[in-house]
Image (cartoon, rainbow, N blue to C red; front, side, top):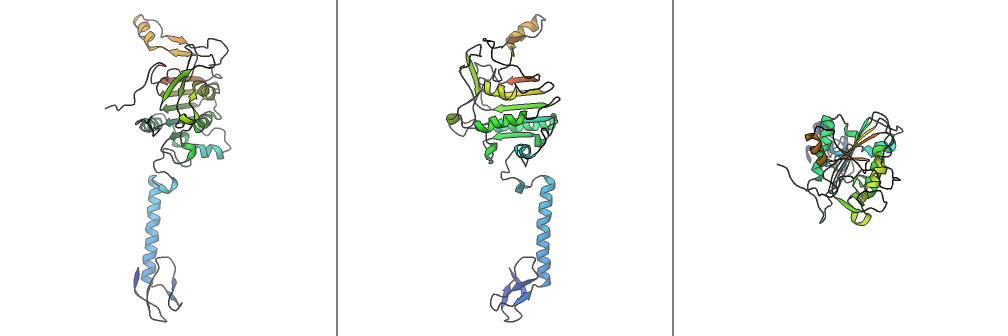
Length: 300
């Protein structure tokens, strides 16, 4: 910008005054140092103040885009993983949630999984008293590598969910994505079929089997800790591989006969496999039975 009356005092050339907070500028022709006119100093100062006001407003409103590389991220910065990794505390809060939504971005693409995660996150914050900093979200739209739902990152995030859990804690595991069934290779399934969830890289890295989920978030549950697992995927009926299963068909029959609700025994046929926690309570809510599929659709 050319300042009005900005003329070198030595060679008399008309000069462009830099828009900085400097009080002097050098003439490019004769190298003479000239004072910045007072009116230009005021204008530069006004620009700096306006920029500062904008930044303060962004901080107050929570819209500071410079705090995150990805403005679409559902994770508060720093992410729960970063806080956990840098903190010496074993447990920052009594409520903690891991929410996973996988689109897949391929021929296996799903449309509503990230919306599912957004809705669950909002529900936990507004209705259940969860804090943003204690909710870890993995989705395909995240830029940070550790926040993408790969097999490795999901398994590590399950460890984060359980880290330092203690009596009185309330934990939530939510997964929205593909689920498949496969033959049981461990002999711990009554129907001979194991349930799995599919990470974003399942084609190359494989699925996460129900036994892996069980050992990660059911076995470590201590007395007084409650886990709610919600799995919106196909073939997810017994994806946590718990000891007892709630049978809705039996429930209808028993309600009509005024009897107690029906819980089916899901203990392993061999009697050797472990399906119980370390004293805590695990509750699993699934989108469908093991032999059913869950549709990816829009509800109006």
